[in-house]
Length: 132
Image (cartoon, rainbow, N blue to C red):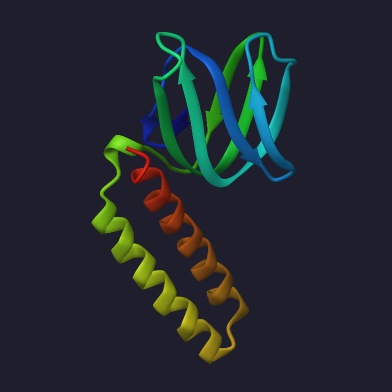
């Protein structure tokens, strides 16, 4: 998983679960080559070292590509569960909720859309951060 800030995650996996704009997708070894647009959601990675070893990553949209048994996710931002500051994410959620209310009061469709995205991202980070 890479972002403009660099590499966020790089491991061997026995299973990867993502949510695309078309729905949930599970990827096993030797999956057919494909590319899809990701939704703002969590990525679940079952590591090959132990079936119970699962990593969770909050991904804020992006693209997933599967080519020759290698999965690459390119996202605007992504955070591993262990790196998420829950209290910071909760503060971001409160700010987004306030911005959403202000946008509705001002009847600003653009501000409302941006506030909804910020709220969705904050909730995703909280949910993934609580996976630990």
